[in-house]
Image 1 (tube, rainbow over the protein chains, first blue to last red):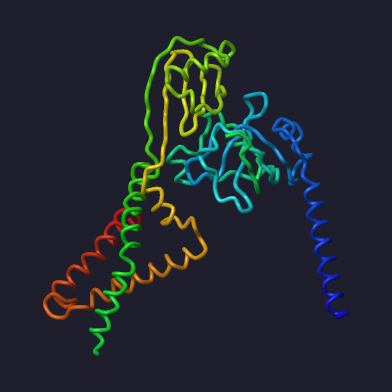
Image 2 (cartoon, rainbow over the protein chains, first blue to last red; image 1 turned 120 degrees about the horizontal axis):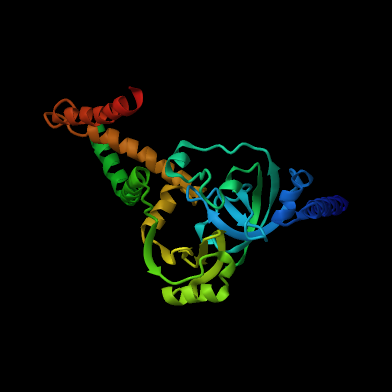
Length: 148
Length: 188
């Protein structure tokens, strides 16, 4: 009987610890706007951030990246799939979407031969081209459509 | 029961069991071929319509009422989602199931609507292994069954129609054709 009680107490403690860790991880998430991220990128480097914006474009090749618009209506930020996210649907275009993910800096964007051939990896003639080639991006682990 | 009877039994049973899978992978294979060859997206049906309207030529003069008049003309009021300006002279209006590109300088409006092509969406979903988990096992099983069906098929008959006769020539041709394409397009 004592062993069962001790085991249950241990399980509860572990559960409490896990919840505590998850809560503290949640607390580490920093909410920021696209402008805030891009104006002080070093402050957010490799940190979990929550950011939202209207999706302007979802790449047609597998939906592995999309672009969100900043409040100024011009600046865009690249968001790539991470965690359990397999792809972004093109139906997200025009929707306000809230993302949670890691803000990354300085990782080279590799252009596949197929992307280059199809023009999917835009090289300077699209509104999101700057964001496409930028060193800054979000590796999203969660997202939620805020408005349809 | 000799081995040919077992072979025929295996070929027949696998053929029945994987008939549906063969059709699914055959159709989606054609779709994939044409996607690669001419960027045809089998999953969607896309339609474009063009209109011309007298519009403000720069974005600063465009407001919500301009957007609403465009939605009115194009009949897309109920599908409106959002809009933004990709550049000084372009307005992009997002719709549920499409978008409208507006060239403000010329007043040219292009409405693109997109909807899922029935059947292709479902078979592509399966061919690209989107369900994962158990589907991975079942489709692996199908791939193994295809190999077994191919092998059991070529050794099924003996005589002039078998592997040592007419059948052998066809098997050889079926191996040489892909090799020829590799030789021309990849190896040389």
